[in-house]
Image (tube, rainbow, N blue to C red):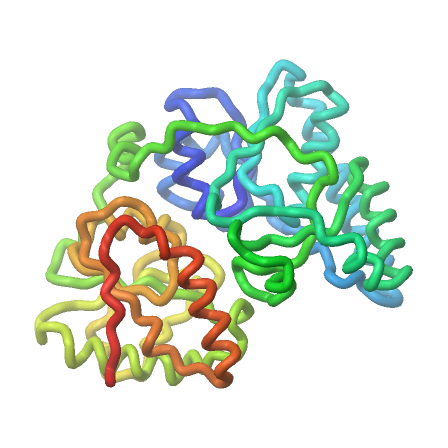
Length: 351
């Protein structure tokens, strides 16, 4: 099972064309034409509703509805695993706060299936929260962990998702690389794989070409909310539009790659470049576009970590932050992800 488009490169590197393996993914990935063209829709199982694990625990009556939802999802998943041979090998691409993974791992462990975890975010790590921090949450949280563990059938602990070089004091902020959630107390063994490039993946599965077909640059959307709630997105895209309008050739188009969390949102609507913008579907991994354009603009996107011949431009200095602390947190995240980037990223500015 894999959980996001970021995992797809690792999945395609592992998956053998023509395999009879079953692939379990969230619904938004199940409809990706790239995935369906590569392996066929009949091998894909879509999870329509992804249960969310509360942190901290739900209160009052909401707690019991939460437990009921988790239990019903568990029953469905356990029934599904009865159809899986105990000789099958299972691969998981996320070890942090994915309830579906926890339940499937619990069920397959009881069936003695071989299982592995593949690290699709090597710049991050999952580690148990310090005991004193967990104790400070109070008795209600301790009870939530116990109930959650009973439902899953595995001991669940509070965990922190953090940069591998982060210090303990950095944990807890609600952003992509410093988050607090849950993990299995007994994690799966990690399996290292030979990671293919996206051109190699295209050739392996016969994927179609994603070149622009006209003179155009690629702009990749970054969802600021909820990761950076103190960003004025409207003003940020207005500044970005003004910069692009001045910097690009008059006949150059702007192809805006939507994020899967905002499939119908055009942040350039009403800006000076609105008529130059075409929307690219959220259901195609951004990496397939990155390798197909000669100029790529982005705020923060792990898709540009894939090897590419494109010129890369970061729009991060155009972000309108409402608080200085938010700006510092954003660039701390940015530096964590891109500090070891093998290519040159040009940090543009409108000043």
